[in-house]
Length: 227
Length: 227
Image 1 (tube, helix red, strand yellow):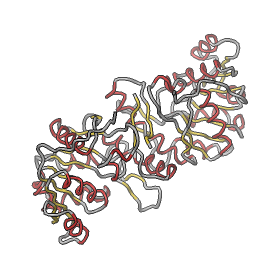
Image 2 (cartoon, rainbow over the protein chains, first blue to last red):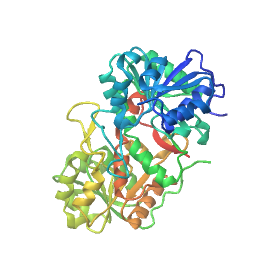
Image 3 (cartoon, each protein chain N blue to C red):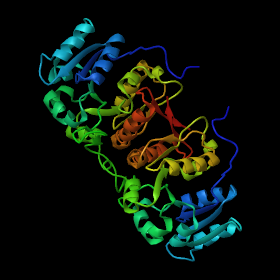
Image 4 (tube, chains in turn yellow, brown):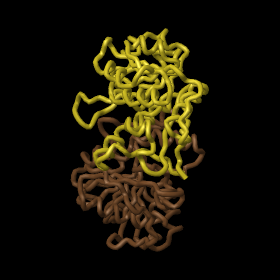
């Protein structure tokens, strides 16, 4: 029996804002369009060539604009910017444009400035997820999907067998909404780790993820919590 | 088919030093005695009531002494002290007493002084494993077994299905020796993450381990790298 759900159906979400034009934003945006949602990809300045190319490739349900355009458009907003610039990007998006909304924080606070392997710009006693929740108290921040490569995020079947995804955040309804999205991506039983402070543990998985990528010579692996 | 080896046989190791008298040291010491090894448990001062009790309970192959006694006795030495005091304990053990030997670092640099959840005293750009290797360059430090509860360390079958254990360190022969010990404990395929700098990632698993223990309400779980 497959551990993953095969019926991708988002019942309630129809408009999604994606902040960021990188691999993560593109991958999530494309998947969300394929599931029937309208998705607007936001960038620092518009027009942005990568966002325009993505929108063109994904048909009439896909559009592009500024961070603020995307945040305003989405009923749910995904932070897919580089973690080191996420707070600034969200400020540009405008707090009022995502106040009261579910803000899915997929970012990792990776610092590549000192070469490989990257270190974290924040960890141990704080996390990017918590920083975002503090800076934008009216957003319902849910940390999710940051513990795997973007290919696996939207296609868990890429990795054989059972494996896990996680959510944490302060708002139960917001987490339920994100779990609904994860179900649609094929994740059967996301593990709810509690409030947003669990983002510390989730982000601190990155160093071993990077190390494993080098050891296993693939991005198609994932953590499973055997129990 | 079980993923774990059922024939516990240590071919070459006969004398083990255990530094630390806590749950980890006791659990590992008892298992190593049961596999036919002679084990000496070391503590800051001797006699130590916990070490004496452990030695008495484990028969003629078990003995107790100071950190220095245990380090000198062992052909392989396990650091099972609290991570926050490991460097001091190893200094007391005496660098010359474990020079050239395999030093298995099982400790985690957990700081409970600010309450729960614990934070790490070192992480991100350094690790306890690296600190120990730097402080004792003649020891062959191998980080292992720090990513799970002590019950699971010596009995992987406590957790259903397949799951993983890791080693890292700068000396290939030392890692091979530790893998031999892990085989005897029942771990079939430890993942070799490379040099001792991988201890960062291994120790940074602790925050999510602690969180998962609270969420799952059990210590009998473990990380598996699905791939």
